[in-house]
Image (cartoon, rainbow, N blue to C red; front, side, top):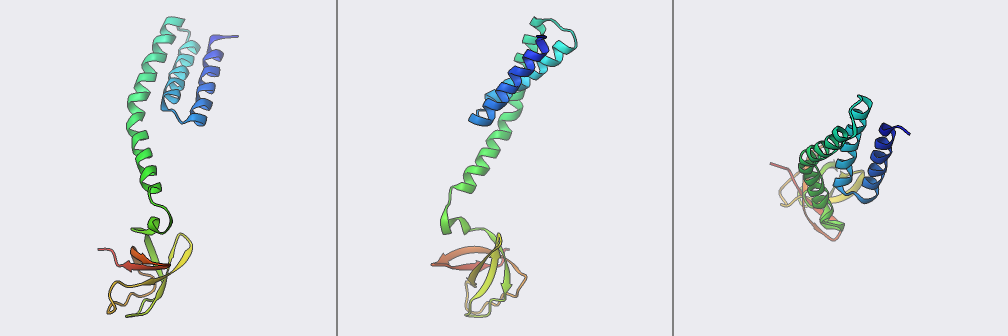
Length: 146
């Protein structure tokens, strides 16, 4: 078996490990292994391939770390709230106008909710984009974003 095939197998195993465990280092070393495979295909010997693996793994780690941190922070922020609390701050579109002191309806992600304006003197026409500011039971309080 040629050495480039072994590097390809190592990279494939590491990518599968990355998918199963979500450990960033496995992806970085897989990138290094693909670099070593490229070096092998270009005819470089094993020490050059090993150096390429180490350098590309380090470069991948330094380059991907900020991206992974931002991605995980976004996921954590989205999943921090559950149930009705997850609706707070979400944008909705008014489907039935909200008249002063009465309930209207708004759609969030395909779900239709009863909504009310924060003030009894407010009227919000259909088609207006609003933000959920509070809830009481299953009735959402919405306001026009500023």
